[in-house]
Length: 109
Image (cartoon, rainbow, N blue to C red):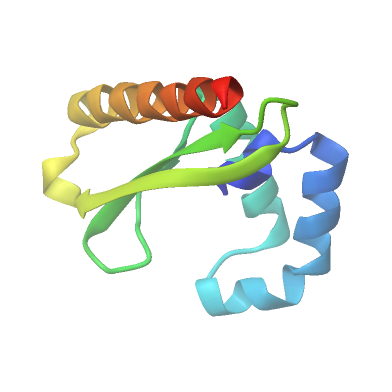
């Protein structure tokens, strides 16, 4: 989701639509996925309140190449009760800072 949020909207939408038949296995749909991408863009990171493993929550931040293309993402998953609203924001700030530091380091290479 984080990598899709880092892509241009048209490109992300094309990928989502090409994969919509797979969403049933994840108990989601195209509209939900597109909405999550938009929300991640507004936040500057992705927050998944219900992780892929029951009882978890995940945060992800995208990493772009020096020319602005999405290249990777870093993710932290934790037990839901360990990532309340305030703590999730604190952790997201650290995660985004780490992603920006990786971008800066790769830009120097």
